[in-house]
Image (cartoon, rainbow, N blue to C red; front, side):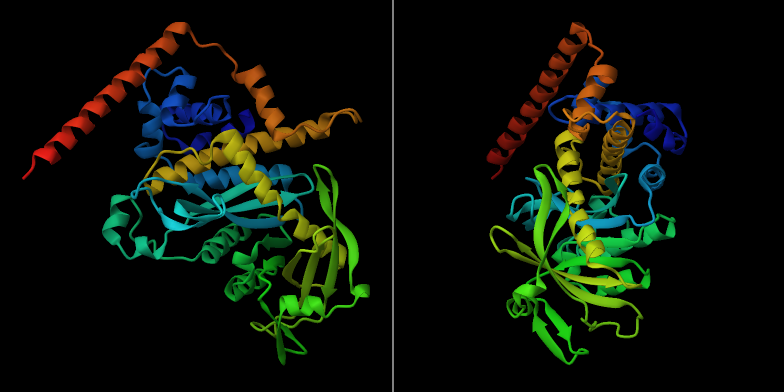
Amino acid sequence: MAGVLACFAGRFGRVEPRRTAAAFVTGLLADIEVKTCWQLAEQAGHARPDAMQRLLYRAVWDADAVRDDLRAVVVDRFGAPDAVLVVDETGDLKKGLHSVGVQRQYTGTAGRIENAQVGVFLGYASGHGHTLIDRRVYLPVSWTEDRDRCQAAGVPDEVEFATKPDLAADMITAAVDAGVPARWAAADEAYGNSSVFRSHLREHRLGYVLAVSRSHLVPLDGGKARVRADQVATELPASAWQRRSAGAGSKGPRYYDWAWLDDVTTDADPDDGGHHSLLIRKNTTTGELAFYRCWTPQPATLAQLVRVAGIRWTVEEAFQAAKSQVGLDQHQVRRWDSWHRFTTLALAALAVLAISAADAATDETDEPDLIPLTVNEVRRLINTLIIGKILSLAHRLHWSHWRRRHQARARRSHYARRLNLELQP
């Protein structure tokens, strides 16, 4: 944990916010029910939440610079030439209208259209481990066309509308420019269906395995014919399918049947000098199909493409760990800077767990009766062995009284406001 915290300590010009940031990340790792500034301050032994709130709102520090330092630490531990940059999005359900980027929109978190805030994230995955290394908040058109609303939420004037694939491309460019070692990119169909995003990856000479929809039109016969992906699958003979594992799962190898058409040409960049193909995955139990547009600057094997397709799920595991273990979705902030600051510190806490789990797996002797340490178990051990100092009873009672006083003032304010509204003619 000390190594991750030390990597960005120099980004704070004063000792107070530096210590608060360390306490903030430690609090995110702590075994507390909700990871808001109040709870984090109580866990840190503070008398009030002011320092934690100031860290997210008014303290002078650059969240993007901290993100860069964190990314460098992750790459130093997990870096590998054949690593995969994995893109995905996740939503946080919201009740109000003022949190940056919030609107009624589809989010996979709920599986339907809800009032939500969506963030696009970049994961890094190699044989050494995986975690999240970058983040962007998605601003819908309803926000970018309302500059007053943007100004109220602290959105910089130069920020304009960008699609989710645009945000993903921006993060990948930043990673490549920073020298992050990677040979592949992977994403779901929201990104794979974008020809602009696919072209962006080819410009960086990144091989990709990108999911596409079943209605995606696949160019065949030198681009002369365009056929739906699901139609291509129905016309394949039984001999076209091969059973291979997409990687180890919690219940063993994840076997699927795979078909690979390696003569697919591109409809966007026919002179790129690479190799385009279509990969189809079939569930061995249900028969459900999934489709992937693939490209590599050099010839690749089916085993390589299947491996990358399987690694895409590491970002889902990272989201689950980030939300359940370090409170990625528990922020109560509204402004642009505050969202990026909270999210960056949450990624730092997640990196602590991911690196600790990887180090433990390397150090442990092979014991067949034990599974490797998971990030969940690492967090329990951190709480037991490092964080678990017992705060005094007086401190706990102080915070109980502080919360109740604050809630009483808020209630009086709400009652007074409602009474004034009712008395107005």
